[in-house]
Length: 102
Length: 135
Image (cartoon, rainbow over all chains, first blue to last red; front, side, top):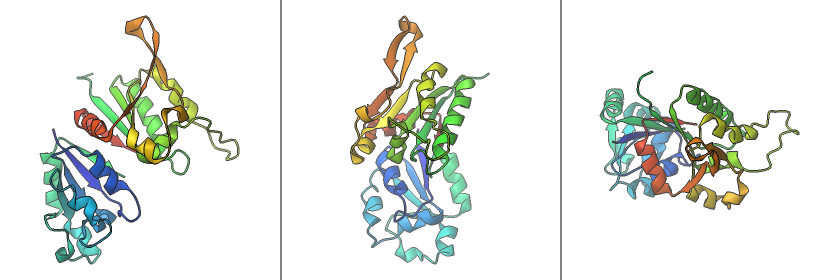
């Protein structure tokens, strides 16, 4: 039983990413979309939220949302996987259910 | 009706600033009417939804906090509150409305619907659910 968690808010604006990481069980997947993609960047005051959780959770970020915001993939925290819309669909199929951290 | 599913409604927003809390309550009652196994989780600002003493007369909008007390009558009696969210806001169980139900399997004894759980226990409850609704 695994959950795909989606986070669509910037971690500098809301606590969605932090709550997701706190309440996600080990083995879950986290996909950052829309303004949530800012949570995937390295060297920020929130980068540790992701890097500290990488042993327990797998992190993904939606490529088109990164591109739209001018965030180059070289600025991402190491280990985060970039997916396209097909990858998003695959993640929803691979996991039993989706939890969207609005 | 096919098999019963376990529905978990996750509430993360305070009651009057946005429509989320009220909408969640409506959907919960609909789910309960279809005799699904309904559970409610309150985390983050969602815990403010259950605070005692809400009075919206000065706002001219409906005070829907009394509706939570009716949930037991709709067989919605599994209400989980994350302890870490209460602690972060300086709240304890005493600050919340008591929510109870009558247990038909125990001579209609009145029992507490609310259970305070840790983040880890909450994560397990999410895993065990068939469907998650986020508000």
